[in-house]
Length: 165
Image (cartoon, rainbow, N blue to C red; front, side, top):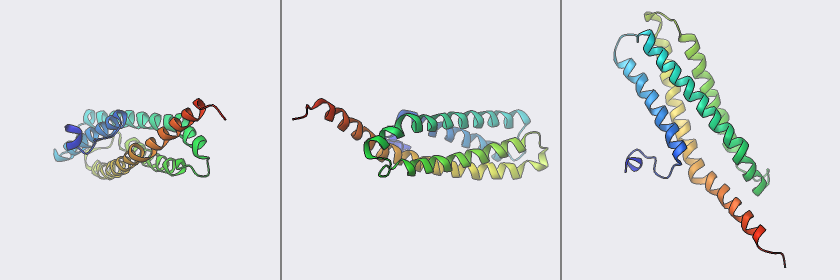
């Protein structure tokens, strides 16, 4: 029931986990901003560690899809007809946002209170962009791209089982 309420019905568990983690990190950033004062160094470092870990996990996830799943779709449809180029373009867009987040995090470490807020604002913008982009990307993967790949695999398996006449 929670999946329906949060709009995650029909998504694969790994994707739900990624979106949930991103949502938790955004909430943590909002709580830090609502406190009114610049966060204590340990609070900012904790958020920094969480975002870096999430970034690595997401990079690993996308690399796994590109290595293990995209070739199946390309093989089944032929590279010229395959939608993998569109999904790969979305992965590159997500990677650019992650890179920008890492830059902001690196620049923000050790800043004093009065210099904190521009980093906070930029990080907030980037997390919003990442949430929107990743959510849209995951929905298209789970509802269009992955079912297509599964159909290709099924069709290839059936083709191999039927003896030629």
